[in-house]
Image (cartoon, rainbow, N blue to C red; front, side, top):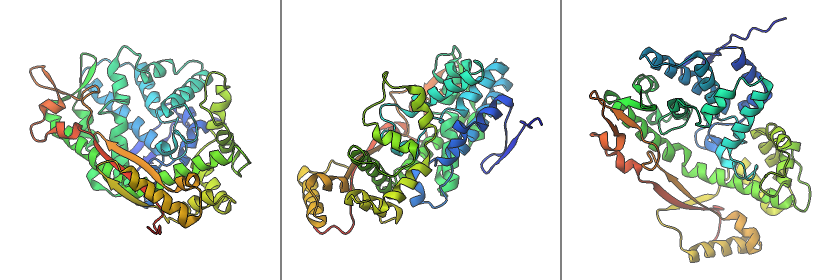
Length: 410
């Protein structure tokens, strides 16, 4: 019996999203892509916003929908984009996040050492290309920025791309943070192509300003919320401690997670990358949270304590500063942890988490968001904006933070 591969997905952001053809359908149905249903888009953010349980799967479909809408609008303005190019850029954006591991960015360097999620996405695209007899050749070229029509690559990855438009709207919707919402249709409708680069018509400048402000708000109110930072860094420390323990004894975990815990060094040319990819594509949030539950009663006090606190949402206190914390201050907290929990200073260091959070809403050192005027001239948004000083948003806001048990006696 032949499968009906012309499907429509009901999306809460855009309404109906069409699966355009058999190739898209077959890739979406593959276990490598279905895995994205089990990876949260915004990691531990549901610790603060309970409804933020949406997935990389939904985001990938949403980004594909916006990409196809963008191409439709550009074609309507007379730009030559073939059906082959439409299929390729649609597949490229569909798979752009396929290399994300459990809890997305939070554990990117904690589980798979030495390989970025972009590199893993490319490996997955190449695997799909093998399975489909080279039908993703062009998609891979566009994804890598090697295709002659550079604006197609910029729609996938730039300072104003369909990836960012979708995740801002989707994350805003599911967190309930209305300030993060952007007008996707307006931004796409204002896009032009000038000299093989994307540009925004001058009359769309206020939509671009709103987009940049929304991005800044979402970073500090959602992605880098202090409670989210505490939870995410605790999860990282759990994996760090587990990797250390795995040098000496087996920890209960799924086969895929065990494989990566025991691999202590960066992956490189001496590794069987096909095997690594196969194991990676078995990993999702469930592997990690199953392990955290299994380690809830582990014999190692530090691992047990971190797992219990994370699962029970007894999160660490977080202190935030605009300046680095004084070494003496950090040392005092470390000694207090060691004394209170009767730990060595080394073991106590796993209960004192340190980090730096920073955000650029707009980066001047990266390809610009170009504003196109009626006379054909182009300006960087940072120069063109008259209502808002975009240069202010281009300066990174850096915050230093430390986390430690709330009940610490000092």
